[in-house]
Image (cartoon, rainbow, N blue to C red; front, side, top):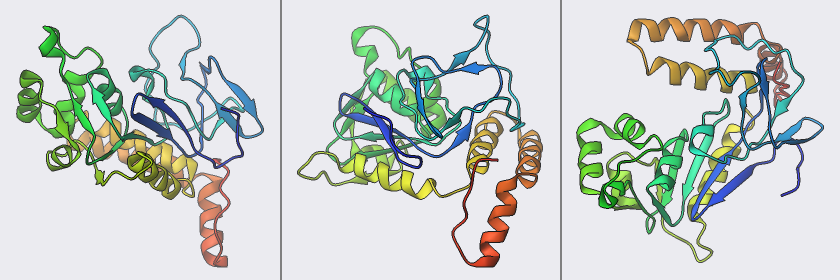
Length: 252
């Protein structure tokens, strides 16, 4: 797919599951983008990896940037590359079994058609989920129910998945077979106008805060909030509110 203008949306289709990434974020120092190509203010990429040595990135709550690379849309290629600084949405319009569901679980939000089928079915093959399923499914729906679904290799439809909290929205399938994808695009369009730095830092605060106790989580939130207060986008937001116009955020 060719690059598009800033603010557009991109997706990757894996079987009948589509992944949508949207919003602008800046890449921190020490990262490079393999397999990417750029146009002004747009970067399309497969993912990101540490720039040197293959070492894992250090966690940081600072939005300081030493690179001019800017991201509007990213293609997602593998489960372990869905940990992006931008909101990611999995749209499940058909089958998402085993690795397909694990890829969806790596996204921030999941939506599905009522006719979709999803489950971690690896125990039927005498193996276990190996792409994050044993860790992300309990975090999404609770340990007891996650164990039940993994032990039984049960397959859920969209309504059942919504009932257990596996997905956020369930849609009746349309004639084109892309009801979930259309819903994902609608959600992404809601996200696009917001402040890019705020979106990235909000996701960071949520993700990191969920891994620690409440007191530590609140400290993380405070540190992240402090970073947004100093941005040019915050001043632009206040000015736009005063002038009764839409803000023009630049991710700064």
